[in-house]
Amino acid sequence: MSAVPRSGKPAGRLRRMLDRLSSSQEDLESEELREDAALTGCTRIGDCQDRQIVTVTGTLRTVTLRPRAGVPALEAELFDGTAELDVVWLGRRSIVGIEPGRKLIASGRISMSRGRRVLFNPKYELRPLGRE
Image (cartoon, rainbow, N blue to C red; front, side, top):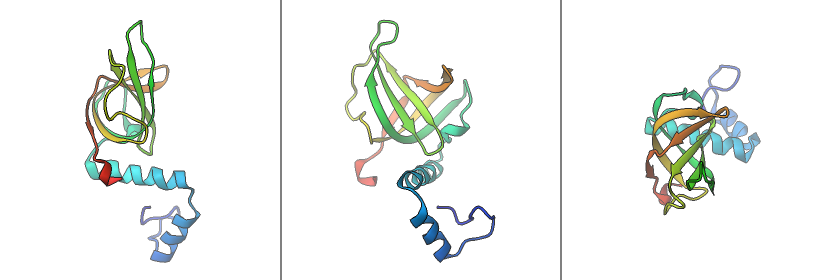
């Protein structure tokens, strides 16, 4: 939760607590993911542009096997609290540790496909489970 509420005035401890209590679980998780991206120095997915080389972090929401042009492709949706990014590993049916709910850092060149951000065959690092 940021220290500056919507009005632009600094919030006191009570105000921050009330904001947190009145927020939905999804809003709280999104805020935590945005803070995590800022702490790790990663680019926010919502700020990524087509053809940009980026390092992003977030939580995998879904992981599916979806062939592309007859080649197996493992697809995962990465969410960082600002936007979604499709991460695709071509030629892979599974990768140990790539599962829904897992946090990771991925690096590569963003491309746009059907209006969605996609990162093909990224360099990636799984985040430790103990930090969650």
